[in-house]
Image (cartoon, rainbow, N blue to C red; front, side, top):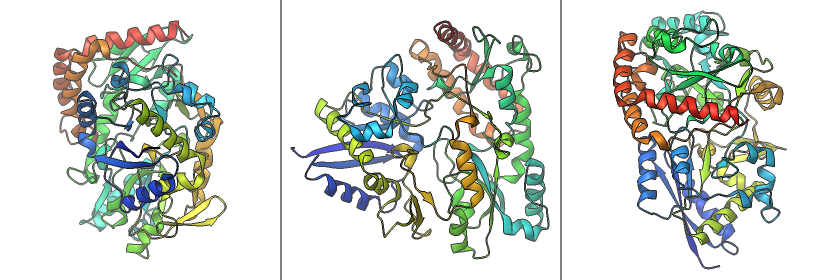
Length: 498
């Protein structure tokens, strides 16, 4: 094959040691695909606009990270991604067939087409807090087992360690906090329509008990009247209860708590490892965090608190799901047919052999990580840790290694999140919102929402109710009600066709 360069767009910061990984991959592929890679890591805050501009300009991007919460639905609606269904469940591509079972592909099709490749290790990753257990012991407070005991610990940190940040939650702030009620709303018939895609603002929709009728859709700042048709107990603006709690807890955050900016990501763990904060937010993926902390503070100990109570207790049917991934890669139509074919072959190679997968996922064996047993590994050095954003390319439950430094409790939580019995299918599973008819209104409302979201989820408004009223009035002028009607109409059409 003639040599070809594949331009691949991801967001975030280029990982330390990544150039060596790319060089190794190119060497392994030299006699077969004969490709070179141009991985472009784009600033998270600029990724969405940069990718859209590149594609509008016709740049030959061979592979791009995308997501329903980023540009995905809009670009799919505009026909900007190739349909890749012919390459899956196909014996000509054994790597892809092994990595992506038919049920995964089926759940991520849109109208029978596969415009995106789902990158998902588990159905949903567990969100949890990492807690400096050694500091808790020094503060003389009891174990952190729920939000009340967490608050007691944070108060104690403020008093005993006034120069320390009690809690760093990164860019997402309190987004996941005080939301145990969400699963009860699900059971009552209120659901997030996961496929709202390029709507940056959050929506929930009420579905009738028989699953046939969309009773309405609501978002932040709505008056109680918007909830009138909702199930009993939820006929008021219940969002405000959380936002008021955010304001109350803002005292525990550092001012302007942005560390490494990732869109919606968990970006506060470095401050935790460096000893600057007593609590940070993360997921199950950082099993070695105690060892990393101990490289800076040998006496450091870490405890873990899953944010959602039913998940904390590992109850069945605690998570409602749409079976759709949160992260994808796609091949834009600006790529040539030959680039598309080479890119698919690269992806097939990536998943055909564990060694290829592990190269991108964990780095150079012997330098970045070591195999410690069957299906397990350890990081060589926390100080020079290779940290590829695996959820942008390589995160597949059939290929993952277990970090041998992972505490038993996290392994138990991991097994829990892998069980089918943990999940319940949402009646809106499979729904994908097409924003093409309200593109102008959506852009205007998103612009207004961007002005408030950081303060909203970091609790910095002194009067959050008034702030939301002002936002909502501007959003209505920008076309919020047009979007609401379109969303309800599309949900109803989806229910009618089930």
